Length: 232
Image (cartoon, rainbow, N blue to C red; front, side):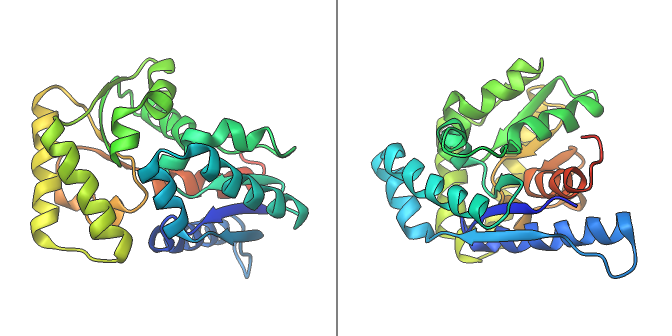
């Protein structure tokens, strides 16, 4: 079993989900008392969010690259960045280490293709929805990406940072998300990517008929399978 290096804390609320899924998948696959071999480097999200707000992606790359190097020194054989947004600097982080990064958008694209999804809605932080670093991975796989309108983007983003990253889950916010998903489904989306690892804390498949693709669950499951040599 390969040792998984987790860069977490962005926010820690969803890092908990990663740890649970990793161990559940290993238990299901190997049985008995098996659990995931992993090393966690949990950053201070306050520092990372400040970098995001200030557009200082160079500093955030330095912080996460240091985390990745420390994980490699601790024996990690591949790296999992437990957040969608910070994959914006995945290439910069990769340049500083010798072990591979398991990219969240790439494994999500694989899952969409398995389900024959060719047009998908994308929810996440404003950075993930508006910038190309994430969407390009989907487009490269032949998947058309729909994002909310400007006002809905602001709402989605605000709920992530002001509520979900603080562990706050509210019914009014759930309704906002589900309404946005309905709008994008009406525009032709065959499914919706929960492209922020906290969104799964707010909504799940039982809340909507639109197929949901929770990136935290997908990413963690693929990491567990990769660690035991299963084909992704």
